[in-house]
Image: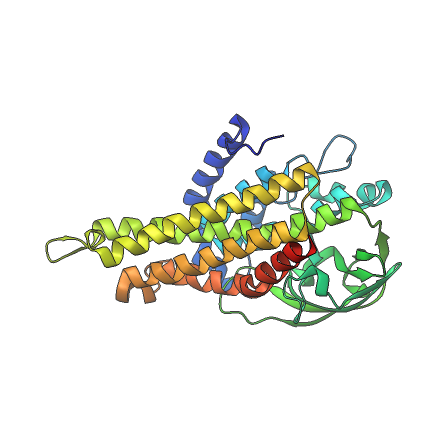
Amino acid sequence: MAFDLQPTDEQRVLKDTLRDFSHEVVRPAARAAEEAGSVPDDLRGQIHELGVTAPVNEEGLSAGPPLDAVTYVIAAEELAWGDPGIAYATFGAGLGAVAVGIAGSDDQRAKYLPAFLEAIPPSAFVAVGERVAAGDLEALETSVDGAKAVGHKYGVVAADAASFGVAVGRDQRGLAAVLFEGSDDYEIVKREQKLGLEAAPTYVVRFDGAGEPMASGPELQRAILWAKLLVGAIAVGSARASFEYASRYAIEREAFGKPIGAFQGVSFKIADMAIAVDAARLSVWRAAWKIDRGDATLADVAEANGHALSAAVLCGDDGVQILGGHGYIRDHPVEKWFRDAVTLSVFDSPELTGDVMTGRSVFAG
């Protein structure tokens, strides 16, 4: 089956709908959500109604989400174009439902997924990142032994209010995961103080107990890769937001009698941003396509996230520079997108995971 870059009619409609929603609803709410340090329930409900943040099959709660991974990353990019923090908060709080839908047992789906059909869904996280293994799934120190998981996780979205969470670690065979119901089964060490993404509260969480084991195998790996690729999709949305805003500013802002975009120093930056956004999107879509086919590897997602995060930081930095002094004040959103991009890159370092995991795949074979 060939890799097709042409979105389906349904994906085009969804993309247009989400772009309009992001422009009219999400972006105007971004500053207030950042200052409050959370996404208000009414906005969470509106986003949930779109059916993309915690997609659940309504008919019998059958295995697998109703969206494919490509459609999911398209949706995440569009909402992140509106605001990366709000997108990370709402999509991140739905990852537990995605993981259980893909890799959970029939009993787990029946127990945990019906609540996500409600108007205001619960939160459910997937805890992957660690201080040392910032996105490197092969270096995770969290140990899993049957129903028990032991380890510390960082950057866990909405852990304080989650109805359940999935802790990802490793056992003797490879990747493994344990489902924990409620905060009584794990310890929230602290809320992280971040440079950006403040609308998406993240926590350090300590696991040292027993929950419900999730079956290892291809479906669990697919669920974990799906969860990790969310970072790349949101990074593409952030990069595109910075690129489009800076491009428009370069057309409207004049110096020495002509738009500043007419000067090579600015136009070359705009060109580099455009190339970075398109390349990052292609890489993320390719990884999502491979997830849907069932043959995605850790290196595929690491490479995609590395491209996307590098693009987000580049576009955020250049966006601020193109606006000059205006880039550093809150009257313009580019300073926020830059902070969000840098913060997102900490959760899945492009220099470490993209290069290290891709290098491993090359030398392995």
